[in-house]
Length: 321
Image 1 (tube, rainbow, N blue to C red):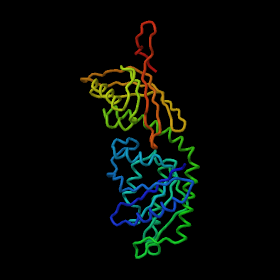
Image 2 (image 1 turned 90 degrees about the vertical axis):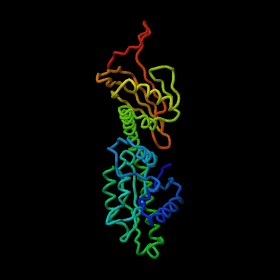
Image 3 (image 1 turned 135 degrees about the vertical axis):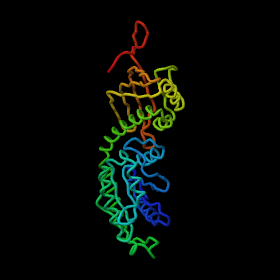
Image 4 (image 1 turned 90 degrees about the horizontal axis):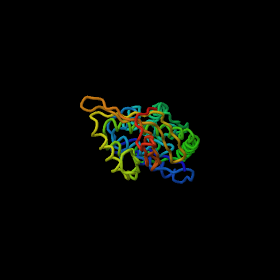
């Protein structure tokens, strides 16, 4: 079933957004064509943007990406501050890219003029993030929809506008599903890119985020298998001691996927520097198997091998792709 995230885009003390988000969630809960879940930015305290596009070096970015990735579309609840959207909301949008792409988004805004100017700017941002913003919008004026400027009292016309907005978000989220399949392919390739960057940085914590806890690895060295994330990371740690600086090259990367399962095959080479001298590595055949777990692609199996010379029983390590 289509999953829609309701993003509460204000963290300001005394915010009225909690009332608005609850109203949206309660109304959405009456529907049977999608599942709705509240995402409160208070629960995701992100620093000022400290990432380069697509790298996701920090745990807070990976956690935020894992939260957003499972959803097919979004409804953003936003106030208007100084003729614009809250900085915390823009910052949260800027942290990610692939997780927003090809998803529908609608807006429920509130403020002195209904939050209209905040949504105008958010539409431009979301277009740049390759999202589809729906035409229908809910605008709640502090003068007419809030008793004493504090307690939300929506009218029937607001309910009608909300229902229309939800209709369009669900419809567009459904229609964009084939494009999100293509986005999954891109996401898998970006995931391999993160593996490469973590290897270069000798970042075991970063690598831990990219594998499932129950990963099974058929690596180049004994034993026959390395079961579990700790065994996999121990293997990487053993490899890192051979290099002062390490790099990993990938060639001929091919992705095949179906539903929540995908596999990648490629050629890879681990190499680097030791005591100021280059240490050339051998090209190996590599396979990565992915499962989508809680909305995020994780490596659940990998296998590395070299061809075998049958007569001598020795591995052939001098071949190049």
